[in-house]
Length: 162
Image (cartoon, rainbow, N blue to C red):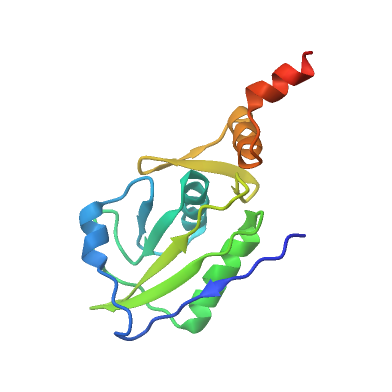
């Protein structure tokens, strides 16, 4: 089993202010997702974004871009990181930052672009397209996996047919 390290960066004060409004103005897209709370769909978004090119998922921000915040503590963050790790294969390590807003915290999950792709969530594979998480076909899964190893699907098929 591949070893992995989880990066936990909990920010509960003003030592590292992130411009939440910058993300809100940018809007949701291939590298940015807004979620009111943390749930299974959050993990699917994390995987879809990782399989694209990495990005961020903001928890405590509505789909309309309103930074409402969520209530949390250090155990909540650790639990979310663990849930992401347990639901993904290969295990995906994320960095997490929390910033105080008027009614709680906005949690920023920094999603890496892993070297080996694709990553699955709950045994299924997803890719971010615009602001949507789309399931991957068997062909695309194979193509991504080979590509992450420096191989081309058509070249592999051609070498088998020789």
